[in-house]
Image (cartoon, rainbow, N blue to C red; front, top):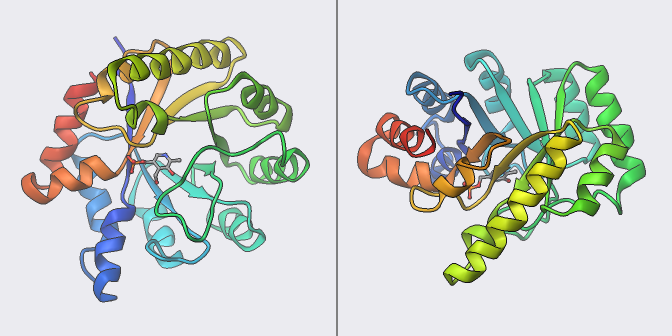
Length: 238
Ligand code: PXP
């Protein structure tokens, strides 16, 4: 049986480097180790404030890894940069300067006109486009209207649920949204807040193609090394 793919977000490696603003730890070297350990793609978020990943990292990653998924907003200079670098995939995320991490999904419905333009431009440059959205029918329908063929569902509410009842409710929402999106021929990915304890029920959702995970893997890597941390996650999602 085909296993769910694993994309690893390496932003935190760059965050540690930026604590000293020097050369180590190198996100590109960490990405190579993740690939050697068996993950399917590398994800990094080029934020507008460049607080962790820098343009130069993305340029090096493009050459160093077989599949690069660039998370980004639709700021004009970032879209221009993506069109020059041509990652395999772009995941469009909402971005607020003050946030610690990406809070919630894109409001595709609200930003439809601009998103349609950006999706078209990225496609014209040979880049697959995913939209990071909350698992709602309204947002899935808007994703289809703007022409994207991949969605990534924000799993933050599921991961942050504080009781098993709430977690089950959030899981059911994700299951329903996944079936709906898949029936509409979208590729379905998911991520945010997933860890070694909560990932299994999400990996079991039939139509999920890929999970994108960062924080929990990089956290474990401090104790086990990154290859072990990646392999442990792959065995959880098998
Ligand atoms: N997917 C997207 C679109 C994200 O923005 C993030 C966080 O950068 C992740 C997945 C990974 O989330 P986490 O670090 O909580 O695993």
